Length: 307
Image 1 (cartoon, rainbow, N blue to C red):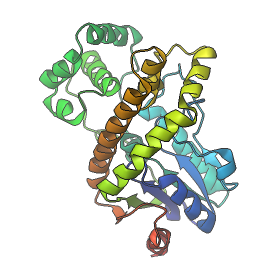
Image 2: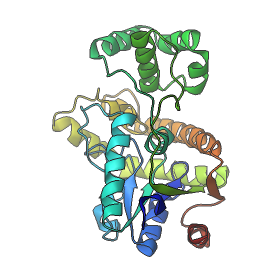
Image 3: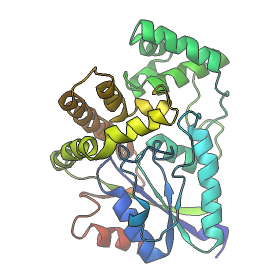
Image 4: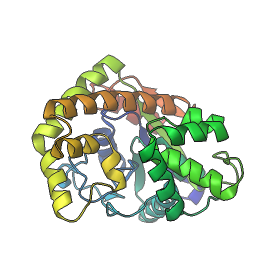
């Protein structure tokens, strides 16, 4: 098989739609191995709140880019693209089929299309911006919107990390933010087959709400306590994610358990909506209007892959 013929399967969609389960089932049938595309599942120790597939449930299939970064280490979309492309090469070199699964659209874009060259992180500038945001919540997003209106519309006002990174690039380069495709090097040598899961939103929310509650009642608080006991401070990037920030506030006495669960449920529903919006912009995705474990969903996906 020539390099141009290597198949690459992508399973995308909002959180809770069943991407991980479908990826495993597809990998079993096509001789595949799974590459993570979830920006939080890369972190060691963040298992319960990210719904990371336990080792016992991986059906013996190799999984890549899970647990590759410590919580205190910086990890960017560019680093993800570099490591994920190396994983693809390793998989295809053994004659296996890479199956990329996850809901972080920006990471998937970086993997498939590359990113423009960007400046390295400037920790002093980032700390300055963070102090400003702490003093005046919302000020960084307002500044970004003034400097880069398009970025202000694209980045959610509560997404502090993306806001800081966009401002960091803008201030360091003193130029308009580059478009995603400017000077980027797309992935070569693969024929990409994209499958998207798009269950009814009401049905999805009906799964997300009890899942958030079961995380809190099934080990999330204990997991966070363990991370803090092992040396984490709670200021690391993954602690800003859904569930973990609410768990921290509960442990600090700033939220009751019920408030933490309700907040996580609300923000998870909002996040799923943003994910669906991101992926719907991709005309190459073959959509399955259901969950990954719904009757017939796997057969639809496999038929599309064969075609």
